[in-house]
Length: 311
Image (cartoon, rainbow, N blue to C red):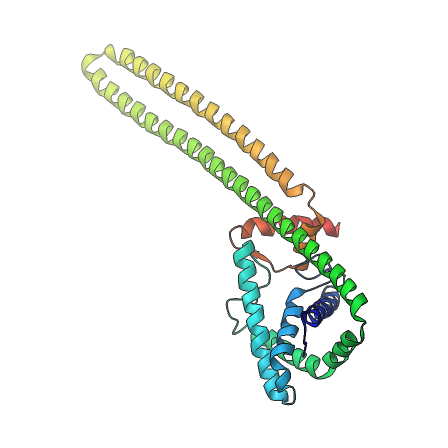
C-alpha cells in the first residue's frame, strides 16, 4: 500500500508503462506489426496506471481472498474503463474503443470478456507482481528517485499537451472535410435539380406546342389560311422562350460545376495533405475509433492513409 504521493506517482507510471508494453505485445500478435498503442505518444497507457493504482489502494486489505480480490478488481477496473471512455468521448467527440459488437456490452465502453480479463490480471498483479515492484520503489534512493520522477512527470505533461493539440487538429480536419463534402453534395443536388427543371419545362412547352398545333388544325378547318401563320407565331414564341431558359440553365450548371470542382480539389487536398505524427499514430493506435459527428468522413480519411501506408 503506497504511503506517500511519491509512491503513488511511481506506481501509476510503472503500471502505465507495463500496460503500454502489454498493449504493444497484443497488437504485435494480432497485426504482426509494431503499433504504438495508447492515448499518449510516449510509452505509457494512463488507464492501466489508474486501474492498477486504484486496485492497489482500495483492495490491498482483501488480497488474502482471491474471490473478493477478483470481484473487486472486476468492478473497479470496469468502472474506470467506462468512465474513461465516456469522458474521452464527451471531451474529444470521438469513441476511442468500441465493444458494441460484443454481447452484454454497456454503451460500447465495457464488455464482460475484457472486464473478466481485467479482474484476473489485476488479481495476479496484486498477488504476484506488485510486491516486487513496490519493494523496488522503496529500495530506490529518495533523492535520485525524486529527480527521475520529476523528469518523467514533466515528459508526461508535455506529451499530454501535444496529444491534446493533435486531437484538436485531428477533429478540425475532420470538420473541414465533412463540411466540404456536404457542400459538394448540395451543389450536385442543385445541378441535378437544374437538369430536372429544364427537362420538365421542355416537356411542358412541348405539350403546349402540341395543344397549339391541335388548336391550329381545328382553326384551319374553319379559317383556312390563318393556320400556317398561327403555328409559325406560336412556334417562334416557344422556341425563343425555351432557348432563353436553356441558356440560363446552362450558365447556372457551368457555374455550379466550377464551384463543385474547386470544392472537390480542396477536399482532395485536405484528404491527402500530410498529417502530423500524432494524428497518424492515433489512427493506427485506435483502429476502431469512431467519430460522434463525422463517422463517414473519418472512415474515408482513415481508409486513405491506411491504404497509402500499405503502399
